[in-house]
Amino acid sequence: MCAHLIVMLRTALLAAVLGLGWIAAPAVSAPPDNNADVYRAVREGSAQSITFTAPADQMLIQSEGQTWRQWRNGPITQIGGWVLAGVFIALVLFRLIRGKIKLEGPPTGRLIQRFTTVERMTHWTVAGTFVLLALTGLTLLFGKHVVIPLIGYSAFSWLAALAKNVHNFIGPLFFAATLVMIALFVRDNLWQSIDALWIRKAGGLLSGEHVPSWRFNFGEKTWFWLGVTGLGLLVGITGLVLDFPGYGQIRQDMQLAHILHASGALIFMALSLGHIYIGSVGMEGALESMKTGYVDETWAKEHHEYWYREAKGATGAAPAAPTGARPSGAH
Amino acid sequence: MARMKFLCDTERCIECNGCVTACKNEHEVPWGIQRRRVVTINDGVVGQEKSMSVACMHCSDAPCMAVCPVDVFYRTEDGVVLHDKDACIGCGYCFYACPFGAPQFPQEGAFGQRGKMDKCTFCAGGPEADGSDAEFEKYGRNRLAEGKLPLCAEMCSTKALLGGDGTALADIFRERVVRRGGTGAELIGWNTAYGGGEQKREQTRGGDK
Amino acid sequence: MNATRTVILIGAALALAACSEAPQVTHYEAGTYSGKPDTRPWESAAYGGDKAKWESDMRARARKQTEIGRMPPS
Ligand code: HEM
Ligand code: SF4
Ligand code: SF4
Image 1 (spheres, rainbow over the protein chains, first blue to last red):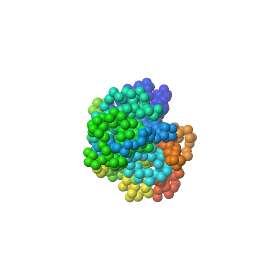
Image 2: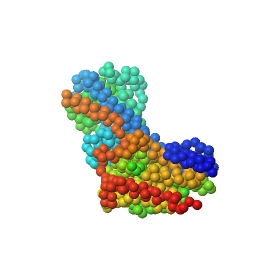
Image 3: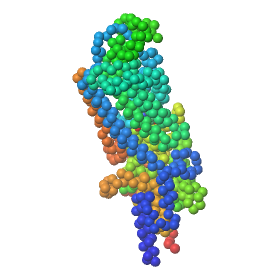
Image 4: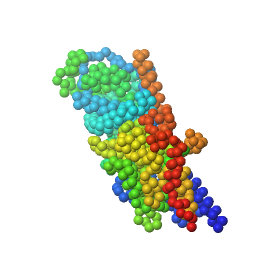
């Protein structure tokens, strides 16, 4: 009788300790109707029966959520933030040390067409939507830490709702524009043997030397393939998976898509800072070419010598255009 | 100080879905949403079938709270995890993070986007005046403010589902286990829900605050 | 130029501040939660702020969920 009581008490104690503490505790003295195996199966995330159909609900406990949380709140928020800040600072330093890349020769006043209207419109659609997506995406990722302390909780909730909706509606537009852009530029971004020289000289970035190239140099090609094509497609496709729930993707798919989307987007943004820098304040004449479609012959010769020669050869004599104006009748 | 928890005794749950229905009715939960669900493990396998009722467990170190980009969640002094629907942007992050699949969303607007998140409130309403129409419409009844416990648990016919202060529930469960003679140590979900930070912090904080 | 540099430096400082680890879990302790405030259950009309009474009521209510002890032991 007494022994029975002790066994009962011990079991009760065990129940309390194990139950409150650790589900997968070793089956002490394994009573015949111990459920440990059943619950171990549960923690592996297998689908169970429910009386209505919703795939996510069939899983009793999903452990992946915790992994997702740790990735998103950990490395993505922290390393991602540092990488962005680091690239920004690096560019500021680069600008301070190296200054603006200026034309060496005097401008000739003669203009060559570098980008067609369609190319420019596509570029600015991609660029505009990208900036909107980057700003709204960053709002969702860092707003809680940066913006709430500044403008307060209610105002931020309003801003975040706007950010989310802008992000979700602009996203597909960005994706479509990216596809067009890839199609337009892919030909001139294929490997050309002169690119080896650019790699050997690291683009002349630090020396200030001009490395000849065709229409796009290897730096631009890297941005095209890694940035626009690789990250653009990655961020775009994962974004669409997140944007349109209810096409059969389950929670785990969306967690994975989100991790890829957010990390891809952060790398994309870091690279884009370099691209935006060189295309605007970093280099004389670069912005003009995407704004008007035309560059000065001096610029063309210094930055893309082979392309310049080809363009000259193709059009025969240099088109004599009045200084600063676009030649009329350009296609 | 109370620490509100849910406990489902799988040795007793008979998958009657009474808790699900009671909850839907009590709070007039939006169309398409069930704040509680009953999951059956090993359905049809004789002798191994276990059912359990699950909803938001009101986690100690709540994942939903940690990932919400707009910080809509708050934990009450008695450990109930509540949220502010006014501020929710329907991003779905809480749904990705939650181990128990508690957050749910009405489909809204263009392309069936997510509306404002809805989940179990432990019958504690939300950030509106207690018992007001606004509170009822967004969050349902506030039974805690009326001195009552969650309806799902209180009306459970087999008393499989228990709700209330964690120590009280542990006492009840312990008594049961003693009677049964040795089975039922698996308080499923408790480690996931209550094993995290806050509980540890509460323990080291030492006593009430 | 100087102004630009200041702006850039402030921007960099802000960008860096974004990386500091903030607590991820909100505590509902008076004054620390920035979101929409809520009253506590014992501050309702039914209890009028009597926390002790609310807690003892809750405990009593929780105990009603067990059938053990309702019958005399056999
Ligand atoms: C096809 C294009 C895109 C689509 C469809 C898309 C869609 C989404 C969706 C659905 C989310 C989840 C949050 C929410 O529902 O509001 C998200 C998050 C995010 N997106 Fe995008 N996105 C796209 C492009 C981009 C681009 C180009 C960037 C940045 C360069 C970006 C950066 C982000 C960031 C930083 C987050 C937040 C991650 C977090 O809060 O953890 N996205 N995006
Ligand atoms: S069960 Fe889910 S919704 Fe409830 S507190 Fe835990 S993580 Fe949040
Ligand atoms: S859906 Fe609402 S509650 Fe959930 S994480 Fe997003 S904003 Fe927060």
